[in-house]
Every structure is written in C-alpha cells, then in structure tokens.
Length: 155
View 1: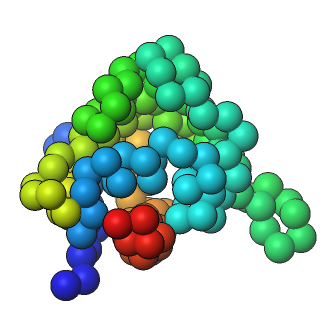
View 2 (view 1 turned 90 degrees about the vertical axis):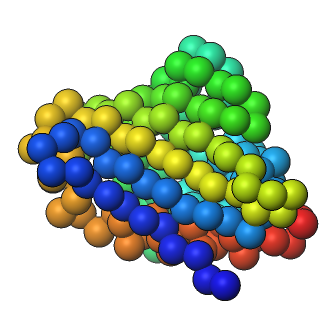
C-alpha cells in the first residue's frame, strides 16, 4: 500500500504536524535520517555537516543543474536518542521566516512498519503560514516516497 505524508496546520497555532507511516523497521527509518550518504540519496541534497549528538550541528544544501545553490539549511541538534527521537532547530538561509524547532519521533508499529512524527514549531502563525505557501508539503511527500524506496533495498 502506498503511504502518504500528512501535513496538518492547526488553526491558531504556530505548529505543523507531519506524520508518515513507512513499510520499514524503525531502525532503517532512523538510519535514513542520520546517515549522510542515505540522506543525500532520498533528499536529493548535499550533507555539509551532520553531528548526530546533543549540541551537534547540521547543514544541508541543494544546487541546481548549473551548480548554483538554491537551498541551504542548518541548525543545532539539541537532543539525540538513537532509534527514537531527534530534536533540532531548522533555519533556511534567505527565507522570509525565522528558525523553527523540530521534534522528530520515530515509532515502531511492528517489526517491519514504523511511523515518523514531526512537530515543527514556528515563531508565529504568520511564519508557519509563509512555510505553507511554499511547495514544501509536496516536496516532502516525494522525498518520503524516495526514502521508502531506497530503504526497502536494505530490508
């Protein structure tokens, strides 16, 4: 069954709630978010830095076909619980909104299925709404489809 990434924006709050179920063991799903070579494959981005630990930092960038950087984001990892949770900040360069806090939770549903929950907390409802005007939900869904396909090869 094809899975779908759901993005929920509760009216009056500055949060985005993102959920997706995967036909993958939770350990494989967590690897997809923590191993640079895997991130680069399913996200289609370059990992410049990834320090998977509390108080570590991360930075990714994406370039177009001519090599021009079109997206760069990074932040600080505040909590890192292998196989369970990552809490980090997310800041996109040259974006019209400020950084956000992301809480990623990895939940086993069975031996071969898992759920990812991401709560993104923005500074304001206006900042959250600016993010919603970008095509990020569609892009995230496509990226999660690539993640599922890539990590299935490891199962």
